[in-house]
Image (cartoon, rainbow over all chains, first blue to last red):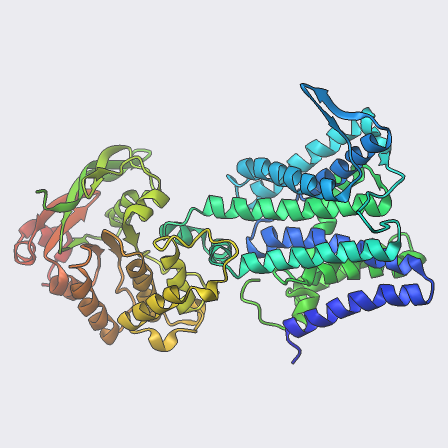
Amino acid sequence: MITEKFFNKWIFLLLLIIPILGLIFNEPYYITLTTKVIILGIAGVGLNLALGYGGLISFGHAAFFGIGGYVTAIMSYHAINEELLFDWLIAIPGSSEMLIIWPLVLLISAFFSFLIGLLSLRTSGVYFIMITLAFAQMLYYFSISWPTYGGEDGLSIFMRSSLPLVNTMNPLIFFFICLFWFAISIYVTSKLINSPYGMALQATKQNEERVKSVGIETFKVKLIAFVFSGAITGLAGSLYTDLNRFVSPSVLDWHMSGEIMIFVILGGIARLYGPLIGAAFFIILEQTLGAYTENWQFWLGLILILEILYARSGIMGLFEKKNKYE
Amino acid sequence: MNNNILNIKNLSKSFGAFKVTDDIAIDLKFNEIHALIGPNGAGKSTLIKQIVGSVKHDIGSIILDQEDITDLTDIERAKIGISRTFQVSSVIPKFSALENIILSLLEKNQKTFQLFQNLQSNKDLFSKAERILIEIELDNQSSTLASELSHGDRRKLEVGLALAMNPKVFLFDEPMAGLDEAGTKMMINLFKKIKSQSPILLIEHDMDAVFALADRISVIVYGKIVATGTVEEIKSNALVHDVYLGYEV
C-alpha cells in the first residue's frame, strides 16, 4: 500500500509540474490557480496544527488570515501613496518589501493569536468554537467600519509586494515564493509534532486531565500551538493579498474560517499534506462544478457528509488508513 | 525532624448540604504505605482529588514535605511531587505503552517545551521508559497502543506513569481493581519495593492486598475518618467491623 510519506512526495512533485506545464502551454491562469491552492493549503496547515494535532476546534482562523492580508495591504497602501503609516512619537513609513512585510505579518498574527488564545483557551468544546468565532467576527465588523482602508469595499494595492532581484509580478516566480512558504510551514509543523512538545500537544488532545496529572501545563502547550497556528495562517493571508493585489473584509468573515476548516477535514485531519489536498479538491470542485451551477457548494456539502460518515480520515486516509494522531 | 511527608489537616468539602469530606486529618510517613478504606461513596476518591488539587476544598490545609501546597493548582502539585493513578484507568489511548511512559517523563526531565528537537533523539528518555516498563512487567507490550491493552495492563501502565514522575508521594486509587491474581501479586511486590522510594497513600477494596501491604490503615465513612491504626488494630476494631469489614475478616 502507498504510504502517506510516499504520497506526500508525489504531491510535491505534482505541485512543481502543474505550473511548469502552464508555462509551456502558455496558460498562466493555471499557475495562478495552483498558487491559490498552495496559499489556501498554507492556511490549512496553520489550522491543522491547532485543530488536527491539538484538538482545538477554532472557528475563527479567518481572523489571522485577514490580519495577515490587511497588514500586507495597509503597508503597501502607505508605501504606494508615500504616506506615513504611523506619525506619533516616531514616524513609521509603509513598505511594499516582502522581506519587511513577512516578519511583520508573522509577528502581528502571532501577537493576535496569543491574545485571542489567552482568552479563548480558558474555555473548551463548543464555548471555544463560539469565542474564536466571536473574535473573528469582531475583526470582520471592524474592517467594514474602517473607511481609511476601504471599509466594505476592500483595499486594492495595484502592485504586488516586491522581493530583491526577482520580479514578483511574474506568476511563476510568485508561485515559487508561495511554494517556498508552503515547504517552510510543513517543515515547522513537522518539527513541532515530532518533538517532545508535539507529544505533549497530541496527548493533550486525547486526555488533558491525564496530561495535567503528570505535571504538564496544558494551557501553555495549547497556547503555543495556537500562536504558531495563527502565525502560519496569517502568512497565508499575506500571500493571498499579494496574489489578488486586493483585500476585503470577506477574508475575515466566518465563511473563510469555515473554508479553511473544510480544507483540513477534506484532506484529512492531522495529516501534514491533508490541508493542501483539501484546498486542491475544493478549488477543483469550484472550477468544475462551478462552471455548471452556482450552487456547487451543495455538492461540496454532500461530499462532506459522505466523508464524515464513511471516510473520516479524509482524502489522505484513502492512501494510509492508520494515523494515531487523528 | 518531622516524620511525615504528607500532612492533611481539617480538610472539608461540601457539595451543597452534602459533606463529602468532613474535617479529615491524615498523614503519610516516609517509607510507608497508608491504606484508606471505606464503603463506596465514603469520600475516598474525593479526598484524593482534593489532595491532587482537581477538586478545591472548602477549608483545611495540605502540607507536602513541609511545604504548604493548599493553594497550589493541580499541575503545580504534580510538579512538586504528587503522583496519582485514577479510579477509572486514564491513559493516552492512541499512544503506545512506551510513549505513555515517555510523556510522564517529560516534565521531570524538563523536555516538555523542547519545540524543535526530535523526540527520537532523546535516547535517555527512551531508556528510562524501557526500564520502567520492565519494572511494571509491561516490556513485552511496549509498542502496543494503550487503548488495545487489557484492563489489567492499563492499570499497570498507570502505575508506570506514576513511577516515571519520581514523585514525593504516590496516591493510588484502586490500582488493583480488575487485576487477576498474578497482576495483583506483581503489584503488591512492586508497591513493597517502591514505598522506600516514595510513600504510598493507597485506596483499595481488595482487603487481602491491603492487609498484605499497609503499614497503617485509615477507615473513612460518610466523609469522616473513623479509625486509624495498624492492620491488627483495624482488624480488631469493632466499629470498623460494623461499618465496613463486616464478616469478611
